[in-house]
Image (tube, rainbow over all chains, first blue to last red; front, side, top):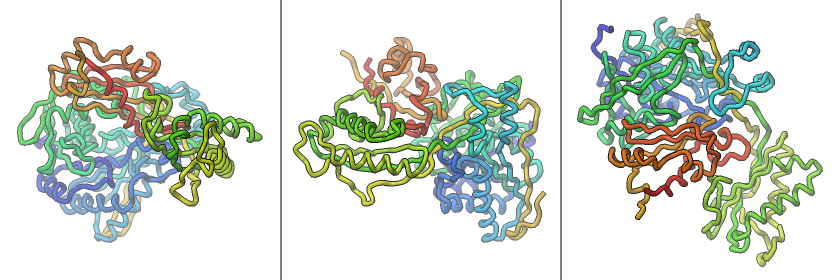
Length: 462
Length: 103
């Protein structure tokens, strides 16, 4: 067991770039944390950000958050670990985040060692694994094919604690990891120091959302986790919030399919014997979380591939006759477009999002009749090229605008457009092509690149 | 007389559990309501399939989680997050049908 009696981890914010109050962060630093860690990404914003290699957080705010973390970390010799850099964690996102760190180092004249861990996986490696039967889809996911791998623009793995530990072993003050299992950035260092992996990972699972797991929850406020030999303690750092047994336990449910068994790289956190107890003062102690290693080491692969281009048009209607017959009108417009289009299948990429009726739930909306006096209609065209999408969107818009539906008395136009131009080209559209497990066994797939900064200047790479 | 689930629950929410699954959480106000709903199996596969207008085989699991006085219902996402025809990338606004549950 560790020499230290406890290991404190400061989680400043739920996602790097969401921000946090300076007062909470300062209070966290006053508690002398052994680690400052943050999760910088998610698949939640959808496949575009991974597929296009774009961040989903704002650069200025990512820099603002990182400046606090890195300045405090370097000044007080506290390791700073960032997971899923750039939001989706491919090499392009990692480099985006690295450039921000370099800027901060230069502006603040900081000296430190930085570990950079790309989480990309070679397509060839994945195709070989596919041929060897070492790839399996996660629940509800399609079977993978070679062509899906080929069409994938960015292909990453959710790395575990091991590569992060390698960087910390190498003495890195700042660690930037590509796509990373959320709890790993919080758990790698305490596990290295001999703390229980089940507790460390479960604590990481809660801290990765920072104060979201407190009450009232916030994604833009700090949380502190303290690992002991047989438990961990959670507390908020703003007087406005506290952890309660319910808030901590409820967070264990969040975005998971089974709250008792949380799978990750190389194994799962088993919470069947987990207990939460209230220590008072807004602190909650958690015990009994266990890590159960898998027989074969497996990691999750993520990838996205382009599927076409999108154009949209946003409009409203206030006509009660049109509103009462909107489904029929849209069906008839579709039919007319289908007859007009030379390639009929192109019209299949046409969607009408009818807000005020079923825009949020689509065909699963149980309330079939709208009670609204106005509707918002978003026309969406999804086609193989941008020009085709623009054409389909434009023709669908003009057809719906002047469609002479049954019973119409408002004959000047069916739609109210808030904007000119009315149509917006949205560019390339992606879908998740990989969400599969890869058996890696003992193979070490991810390497740390160590960089040395002196007074803000990059002096050496190894 | 039947009562609305809003009397018994303080949180009713939906969210992606990864891009291919959608998960619903109902967090009860206290352990008594949790036990009541659990013992009477008011939340069950048949009821969920009917409320959500999905096939029973698309329900991946219903787990009762006592530490949070909560029940979690996980289903196959109607389509993968961001697929053509998507209406809710994060899956955070698909909970409304559960507000109709009575006990």
